[in-house]
Image 1 (cartoon, rainbow, N blue to C red):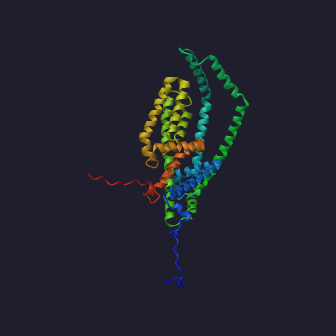
Image 2 (cartoon, rainbow, N blue to C red):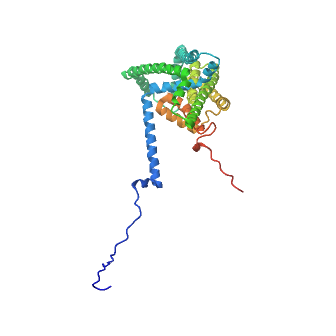
Image 3 (cartoon, rainbow, N blue to C red):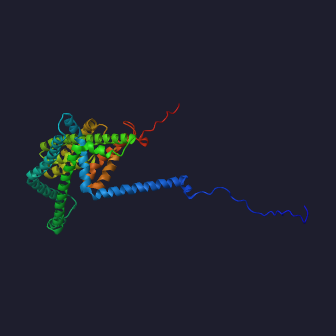
Length: 386
């Protein structure tokens, strides 16, 4: 190839090789471990936000949601009665009216019993409380050290008197009237909703299940049946245990001649629907009344009676009557009570545990009649070879 050749000259340039590897798309950053963690975090934030919105809505509509939940629990409790009457040929409307009247009569009788007993024994309790207060003051004066000064007691009494005669107390009384009006409205709404739940509960549930098909329909049916069983067992078992507790404590208070024995027994019955905390509060109230009216010795005996009745209930009655329908760990019960009290006050504390038990029951039948959800199943570990 000569100098004057017509062939083109090839000139080599020092060009770095091109990177022909495919560039990563932006969405591929979500495919690694950190990206999956970010996706999970976003999902958790969305779930928490939705749950917070639902809770906020429930708190804004407590006049509707609380009667609705109470009616649902009562309907589950009396579902066996309704089923029995329907099997015996009783018309649905007549069975509903009989059951509803029974519930209203029981609730009304409890309320009337408390009001009647308090009005009947209030004067006696007031006189005994005044005498007990004077005895406590006289005992304080005999202490070898100055626990409280007499002028401090007079100042406290004057402060209480000023509060009872102030406009603030009057506004509190007006707020109490508003609370009573809300209670009456909620009670009427609860009775109305309960009527329809008792009469048309199965048909209403079937209507709710219309969007489900196949396995999803079967799962929804299992959850509905389990929820009805758990809530009904909870109310019936707790009511029976509470009645036994109330009767036992009533007998003890009557023997010890403690005033307001009947309303205290009714209060024991009502507070028994708040697990763990309710029995403690009822015992403290009974002991305080006995302390004011009968003295410290009788108060200690009342505490012993309450402890004895609670031990008999916890070790013998609850395992037999409640069975495994309320098999929740005490830690879970305490957390549920705390959350329920923060969100709904006393009513929230009463409803928190049965709702938690119903949710756990639904998890237990998620994949079958006796097959819990996959993440809730106990792990089977292989035996370690020797």
